[in-house]
Structure formats: C-alpha cells, structure tokens
Length: 103
Image (cartoon, rainbow, N blue to C red; front, side):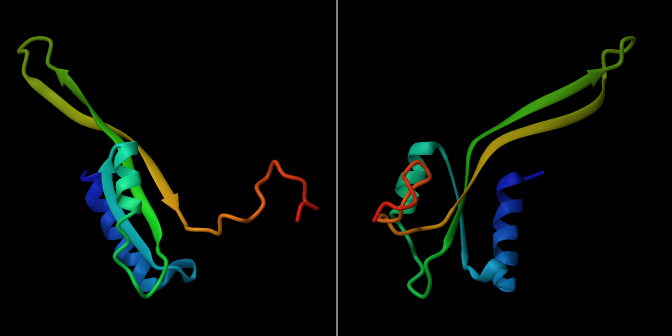
C-alpha cells in the first residue's frame, strides 16, 4: 500500500465533496521540520485550506520462511506514521487553559 498516495487521493475526494465545507491540501514532508516549511507555502488564494500532512513514515517488513526449504512463504508490511490535520485559526482566540471570561 502506498500510504502517501492514499491520503493524496483522499484529500482530492474531500475537495470534490467540499467535505465539512472546507478545501483541503495534502503534503508529505515526512519530518516535523518539513511541516513548518510546507505551512508557509499555501498555494490556494480562493480559500484557507485544511492542511493534511504525513510525517514519521516507516515500514516494517514481516517475512515468514519455510522451515524446511528456507524459502519465503509469506510477506506483509506494517506502516506507522503521524497524520496531522491542521486548520488555520485566529491567533487572538482564547485557549483551553485560559479562563472563559478573559477578554
């Protein structure tokens, strides 16, 4: 399975459906530092997109061999990654730890 291609296609589907009333952009910077660079490069002028990023992608290959012949009999792969879904917001809004009455 190509994890990056899957989420790229998924964000295209979300754009076509106008999922949740947003437009969507996908990128796979693969590192947390790369996310910062990608955020600064917003291509869409018509909307403020929800950004979808994949970082920390790794693959673990699982191989099973025949005890008698030593030949490979089964192969699977496990993928782990961090999926970030981020929307832009105003900087001046209160955060959870602030009191609700704070102006």
